Image 1 (cartoon, one colour):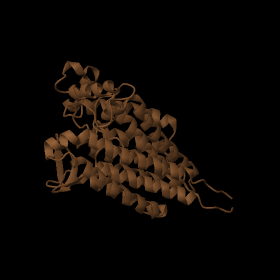
Image 2 (cartoon, rainbow, N blue to C red):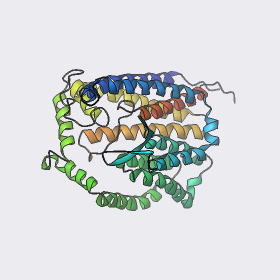
Image 3 (cartoon, rainbow, N blue to C red):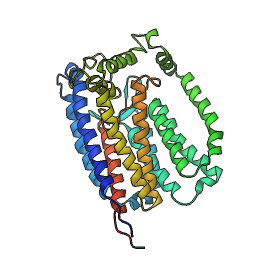
Image 4 (cartoon, rainbow, N blue to C red):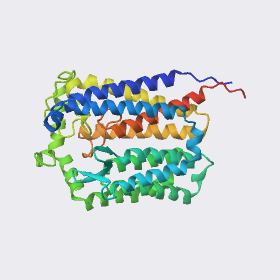
Length: 368
């Protein structure tokens, strides 16, 4: 007989609730000046974020009640749905271009980012493929998974979107590891992967410029180095306790994308080191409990789902903070649950619904 505690579900739900509400506050604080300048309404981004939270909550409720057996049955469908979504950005009239990147699809004022959906589609597919037997004992199956995952990465990098490509690639490798890929196989693959990354950097001048800006942002402070310098100004100004909520100076049109990819810089400026530490504790609580739910899951498919979802949240959070703090070269990547973006909120909150569903199933008393 086994009885699983509801503690994990409560902590996951509360952590998610705290993050999305805090995200609304920070999106308003980071965007009120730019929103008023661009749209004449300082609440423009906040309104969109609240709508995203509402839609995300609906998605969470739906995924909470849909049996994971349904996901498992159609895991190949998830793969092709994600692939089609990624391909749609290249359809003339449907794909939307901004700042030289075609990462969105939409009609009129409605837009969505397919890569946000695709990375979770890949997790559902890998969970279904890996849960039946030790398939990765055979090297050809490892290469097959890398080929399928590589198709996602190729379409995302063509947008171009280097950051999401890295996130998807790391999630793919993580899931192959927990799925049974041997260490020596990874050692064989790591060299061509590094060489491939170098080639991708070299063939696009803007990526090489970002590397240079990362090494010495002051070499070109008004162009490639500008955003990182402004981000570091924000983080440095925060000190231990911050300048106070809604009092950011860098959000006054100095820091580009302050409401999205660089929102952590505004958090650091307004709430300081201790505010950032509290936020990291909430993220850590969420991630740890997702992995605990995965370890307690009743079947391998559900376990892989939780591990994959936890991996995406972990990887994306770490990469975002590393970028804004100047630890790795600048690349656009939203902070989960916090950054402005309805598509991101929908998929991340829906993923949390899946995890809560897995925990609900594992809480049933089983008599063996």
